[in-house]
Each structure stands twice: as C-alpha cells, then as structure tokens.
Length: 413
Length: 95
Image (cartoon, rainbow over all chains, first blue to last red; front, side, top):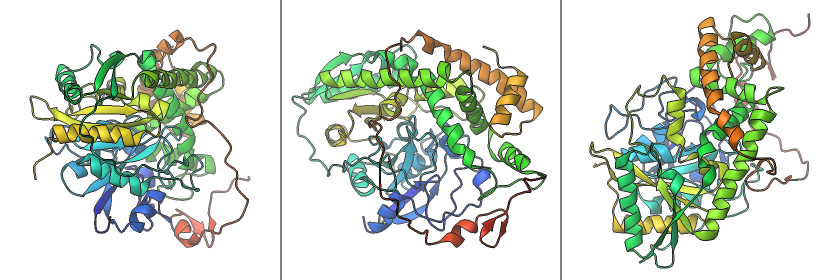
C-alpha cells in the first residue's frame, strides 16, 4: 500500500493529530497514540491525508450533526452525504483519496456509501480492531473502508483486519486474501428478505435493487424469498441498545483530562454538568438521555434487557436464513439521498434511514453496500449484500462478479 | 408513556448534563415520542430468549498482568485543561 493516500473518519486516533469526533467537547484534543488501524496503515506505507467530517460521535444519518463543518453530497450539493461517516464517503466518492475509513454502528458506513456511490464494507464484528476508535456503542461498532472498487475494499481489509491483543473483542480470524472474480454464480443461493421489500421502500430503490438481483440471477445464482421476521423491531432495539452503551461510553468526557472544560464551574459536579451541557450537541444529548433512561432503576428490564433479548431473536433470524441461503441481497437504504434539513426536526424519521442496515450490526455479520445504478435525478443507489459472520470472502467475490457484469456508475473525474 | 419535565431533569442529573429550560421541554416531548415508538417491543415474546451481550460468544479474555509503561505520558498530560506538573488538576471536592 506504499504511497496510497487514505483519509480517516475523525473518530480514529492518529498520534499527534487532533481527534474531534466533530464535537466541541473534544476540540483541541491531540491523540497521544495511534489506533491499531492507523498503525497498520502506516506500517503498510499508506499516506494519511487527513480526517473526515462525521455526525458528532458518529450519531446520525446525514452528517448534519457535526459541530464544525457541513459535508455535501458530491453528486448534488443540495443533498446530504448520509452518515455518520459522511465525510469519508464523500472523500472516497469525489476521489480526494484512494480510499477512506469509517465506522459502522447501525449503518454508518453502508448508508453513506449508498448515498455517495461508493463501496462501503462493514466487516464482521471483531474482524477489525476497535483500539483507538472513540467508542460509541461497543457491542456494535466496527471499522471498515469506503472504496471505488470491490477489490480495493478487499485490499484495505487485508491491511486493517486481523487479531489485535489491544482489543479484547477482536476476533482471532484473519481477513481472507483477495478473491478471484467468479465467472458465474452457479450453485450460489441468494435470499431476498420479504421484510426489506415493504411499503415504505422507495420505488426507485426497489427497481434498482431488483434489477441488480436479476443480474446475479442471470449469472446462475438461485434467488429465493426468505423471511427475517424480527426486522420490524430493528429500530426500537437499536435505539435502546446503542444509546445505553453510548451513555456509559461518553461518561468519560468530563472536562478533566482533555478537550473542552467549563471555566465558570465552582465545584466538581458543576465541572461535569456545565462541560457536558455546553460541549455536547443536541443529538448526542438526546441519546445520552435516552440511554440513561433505559438503564435507570425501574426501567432496565422493560427497555435494555428486553432489547437485548429481541437482539437475540434478530441474530437467530440470520442464523436460520443462512441455513437456506449463502448470501442475502437487499436495499441498503429505504430512500435515495435526501436533502439538507429534510429530517433534522424529526429524530424518528432520521432513525428510519438505518432500518435495513441495523440488523447486521445486531447480528454482527458481514455486509457491504455496492453501487447499483442511479435514481431519475441522477443520485446513487445502493445494493446491500449480507453474509454470515466471517464470510467476507464469499460476499465480496459475489460483489466483484456483479461489478464485472455491471460496472459501477462512479462520480466522473 | 409521557416523560415529564421532572423526569427529564432527573435523567439529566444522572447523566451529568446541565440543560436549559428550552432543552428540558424539547427532550421531554421527543423522549416521549421515541419511547412510545418502542412500545412495540412488548409484542415480541422473549420469555424463553437469552439476552445477547456479545455476538462472538462472551468469554473472558485473560492475560498475564504485566505492566507496560505508556511511552509518551507528556502527550496525554498536554491535553489537560488544567494540570499541575504530572497531575490532572480538579476542583476541590472536600469542604
């Protein structure tokens, strides 16, 4: 990877460089150490070009929650790039770098990849070390690349993936080497989950995804309808588990060791309250409140414990599906890229943009968004492929077969 | 389920967040709507289902307890809003 220019989402540590997480509370915080992914990129002689904008602490679906910068969609500046890794997606799409890294907790790589017309890979949970990634929801967070070809995603994964003793949740599996592009897909069984082709799905997205599935079928794949019956609980489950974990993880931002600290406080309690009240933006505060509520005495069983049990049902849905099929194909997002301000006043409407990506984080499996054409307005649309845990090689080889048959509509130079 | 101003203030206190009155009103309304939308979870029968805490199968990861000094302590301390030599400085906590 010598000389390859790479950009990183600004929640990944690079020694000597500011990590802000697009939050006022971390402004000026200079990283004292490298994230493991940073260390591995440096070890492979990649060139770290800079940091990319994101929704504050990776909480959001449009990058509109950044405290500092506005990132536009390089295909149409009136549209959001998606989020939370919107800066990484836009940078890869606009050819500012060869590839970029983002993080995906509920779709924060795949959704902006779909909106910006790039490949966006969320590896299996644990395949890439999270050491040096600022924690949001630790049981869901995973680092992955944005690239313009599937092979680049494989190459990026081969450099950043693999066991890391500094991350106790890091898996012992090594990433698969770059796969051969299959000439056909004979013998491959692909499932279409009926719960992903629902009323709220935009007709243009559905048409593009079904056309992509037809391409896979024409290459010999067997297409079967399957059911992931607990998909309807994805949003509610996610918005209990992720904020609960976040409310605990973000307790460390207290104005004592780094970043913003309120100078008007007269005692320690006030240092915490005033620093956090002024340092965090609205969405982060909303989620800390939601998570604190879900974990508080008297509500824990009804919310957090219940959500963890429903999470098991969602993971079991995938286990059952992968007895019948090798791979799942679905839309990445329910709609094409939306415009600035369209969903900012309605948190629930914004949360719904992750409905098709959250289930893979719940189950921890591998998934990837690849470009599958454009809308009538010329905006990119994404096909999501989902594979069982640690089945990246098979998933990406199918993505390559599709790419060979239907070259991606990339943003022109 | 309606989240009252008093509930919001109590949660904010637990979360160590100082909110303005406008924020208390805003979050009360939004949390009520969000929690209402989560009521559908009660429809899922989880009586015989174990909670998922780790998708990889939770096991303790053990290692020898060997100290490994961090090589650049100054880089960590340099971020402190207030420091006193090798220490982070905090407001007085004992009256």
